[in-house]
Image 1 (cartoon, helix red, strand yellow):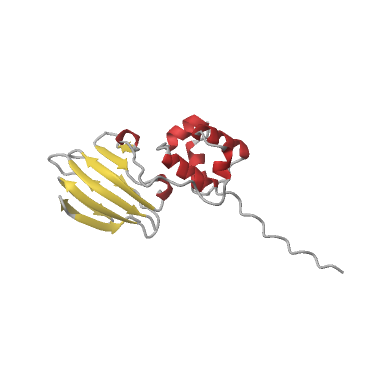
Image 2: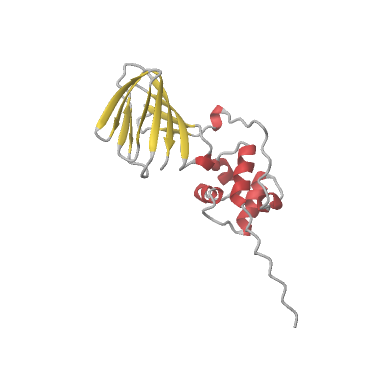
Length: 195
């Protein structure tokens, strides 16, 4: 009696998200732009890149066409496409969030694939502007470095005033706020480490 040959282990499914993020970064495309080109929602693109959703073949085909690459570039599970040694993002392609009163501007400097883990922003606040934040996940911390002007910080029951060149590190798993007491414009770098 012959022994049955052992079955090979099932192949790992293609890591479309890794390849998609690399190709999008290589072409300096925002999620919005790729969403528009491919006809795939921005939230779906984000979920695919973070390996939280498996796209259908039809979606992968639309993404490949929007990126101008063969379908196989997104389906290869071996490795993501090689990125150039240096990639740049133009100022007008840097996503920017503005407060309702336009007194506060956050330019998103970190890549989308790190969102929810490690984020960094260029913060610009007019005199009197306030950036209120709800508590982030447990263990989250923020690091605020003032570049110009002064900023007032509140985290839970604690508060501090920061001048240019000073840095505050604080728990962000509680309500927190950054305020520019004035008189002029204040700029800062804000780094968020999610717990």
